[in-house]
Length: 277
Image 1 (tube, one colour):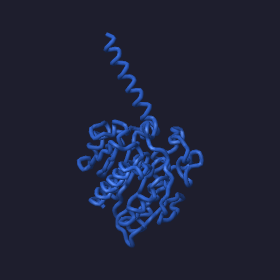
Image 2: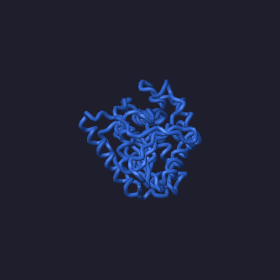
Image 3: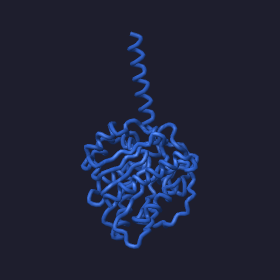
Image 4: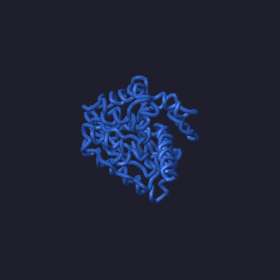
């Protein structure tokens, strides 16, 4: 019948749009680049040939945060402002993940302020390429006497955050991922997203925006995989339906709702990691 034909057409249309959106990093309507305005209080160091932003805000921290930024890298938006805020209690390390840069990058990392996401560029950064950068961050932490690490992932950064948890269960005790783009495991790197998600070894806080892919909802494909991971029963979802993908580190704080939800997300993350660090 014409009705069932229309239904089939709609199903195919929705499925094709989903695949198209999943094959990028940020969904349609995501927030653009935000220039960093924070005066950073940390420093840049080199470990094993890779560069890191590091802030050991307290005298003798025993716990650390490895912060995994979005596609504008280690000094885009509020990334270092967030790092420095967490450094009031923890040692914080941000690896420079996305080199070679795209179109010149931002402060030597990731995409340029005017860049549009490019999947061919992203395909250069599977976990096998990023693992030594995370290992260097872990080495910096161990050298400072750190015994517990949390991972924070923003957008793309959720991908290395999940892998780091999967491979370092003795050290990484918790994580939080904001507006996740973990579908890149499949669409950029040819792996299985459910297999990666099931393999994480610590509890995670997941904070999707209103326009994030439906798979990241608390009842989606991603959620069922995460709930079946080693600490799945301790994972928590905090949904931000009024927000657009990228809001935590790229949203305009002059907007009252954005300010409200940035503060909420940071408070939720601070309280969540404090339980495990």
